[in-house]
Length: 242
Image 1: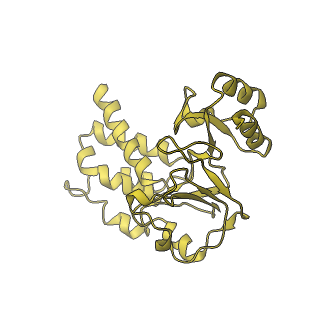
Image 2: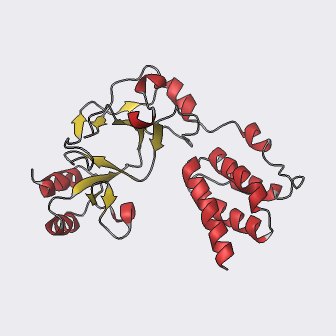
Image 3: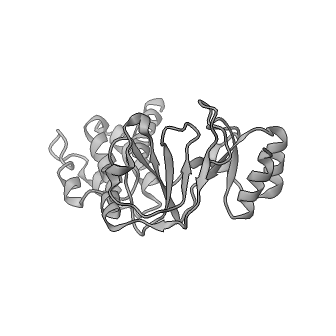
């Protein structure tokens, strides 16, 4: 199996790729280094000829990650159309389902257990070898499908009124302006706005009270919950280090 040829083929088809040791990027900046530049790809796989291939999630797609080890069952998502699918090399039914990304914000907060949403980052792609098994990742080729209506509804952030229930912390509404600021951020600027607001809350001694509400506000604005929690904790450390 010539991994460099496979990586170059992805790039020829418009995918940005990066070399992986198992599932871990070998490049210094992780997925931000992913590239479709053929010379860069040749250089990487000349250094690591047996490296697995990671591909960043294209901006026009989303991926549903079905992980049976954590209880993920595709049947919990209801009837789904056939779509481009990558089967895990683990051989336990784990897979990535690729769909066209619908307009507007999406969130994983209402997905069933063991099913995650990827709208950024990277996925391991064929013919990579699973690091914990002997199997290889394999494509099941179908045209990339639209997200069906019932699943689109599941991926939408909670209604804004849910956010308003969290605006009042234990300090009688202190920090409301920070929550409203985050919830009003345009998609694409939410993470930056969340970090700023969390730093201001930490400066004012409010972050312990507002952390969950800030995360909820970010989810309302379209930010994935796990990333929002990491951003809040990053702001806590930033202010603490100062």
